[in-house]
Image (cartoon, rainbow, N blue to C red; front, side, top):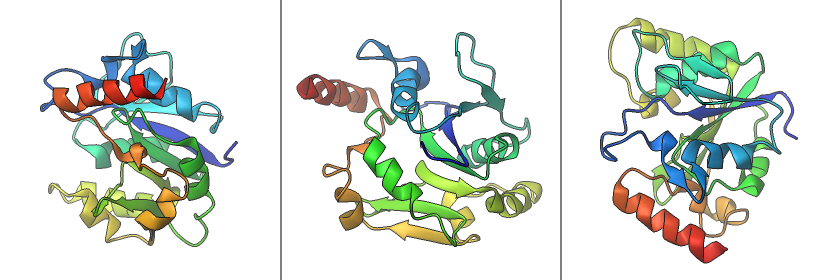
Length: 198
């Protein structure tokens, strides 16, 4: 169990490329949201779902984005404000292959940083990363100026440990954690991977 940390499942996106609500799509007999939560449950004593609007039928505690804010930064802000723990592990609801050993490894790297962010396939992976409450000042500052900000801009404002692909592969050799499902083609490919793993 990873102490002093809450798992924060981000499920507030508009799913425009998918064309439907990703969190509720059935994946191997349960929703994508339930699939991600099932991996997190043995690792964290508390799991919450960040969303723009209340999700009927979701049994997990939910935190709503501030009405004036949108996007993953808004979800991260709402989660950090309301968790009651020093850290959150933020993960997208569309990442069904998230690796428990990888999460546990990343959790050991948090000293002296406000975020631990993987870098895989040449890209930052901020939707499978640890963030401390020390990020709140930067988040509040960005939200209050009324401009649209990227996750990269946010990370540039805080102390971050970036974890390279070589280290990540020691705990998730195929880097499947970072297979996020943005389109129906992604979803169908993921179903094939899940079937092959049985």
